[in-house]
Image (tube, rainbow, N blue to C red; front, side, top):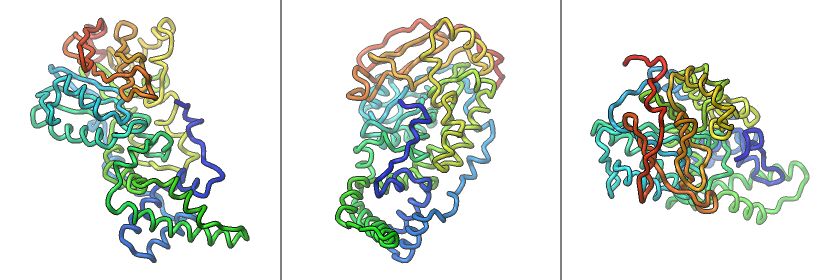
Length: 408
């Protein structure tokens, strides 16, 4: 994975580069909505505004900007088992299989986990083809589990953030396909007509030739069916966009911290609530102008979504820093995804004070040897769950008391 500064490159020399890496995602949604309504004058006005960048700032979500510390899962207590699943990356079938192996769902994907707690540490999207199905399953379980006394905490990953800030480089063809519907061809044709006419007008104004056939071929190549629908769905007012923007970055359950990337020494003083509040602020602002993305707390190399030090730093040098991080985060251990362990397995470090759970679920060309896995925690016992077996883990950290735990 490229570091944040290198992730944010623009496509140059292509007629639609400005569209794919636009700083104006909300305007694309407006154009898409106008095309659906079939109102030519609205379409033309919206397209022109998109081209010249005159549309207003995207709407903010009041529920997010008004969030308080009590909204965040930073002091969850349970005597039931806690099951954590790492990066999914569109591997829906493997995700469902590991949930079944963990006795959380049945063959019809109904919640059977009773009062168990499921934590998913982000990166549901990108790479694999079935991220929409995986998102839909998580959202379904979020609603179903509480009816049996269970809970589901779906956390934010760096790839969900990337989706919101218009970094679409890792979106797979299957993900676009999942948003295609019976109107997609007509919608794309309408978009092509609008953008082609505007491009031709600009070319003539600049005294340059315009080839409509070449423009059409490039447009169809860069805008697959389902692209516009997916863009709208993850926009500030889209169904998936609203859901992703409401995700916390960090959860603390029974004194165990769960998150996607890791906690750096620079971020630890903020605590669980402070980190979640800072990330929520970024999410409420997204999308932002491209040049501002590196300045987001959530996009930082040392932030909770991207930091890899807990997984990559040698244990001998990490140990002293980790003691301080745990104390400031009021935790006894940290469970992380993001940094893949290959061949696929769950890996405790430093006596289980760090547990890596990204086992490369999507596998294939992305993570050869990757497998689906889940970490089960109950009391002072930890178990690695794979589709075909369970393995007990040595995690002495679970026997330690949480630091400065707050009474419920």
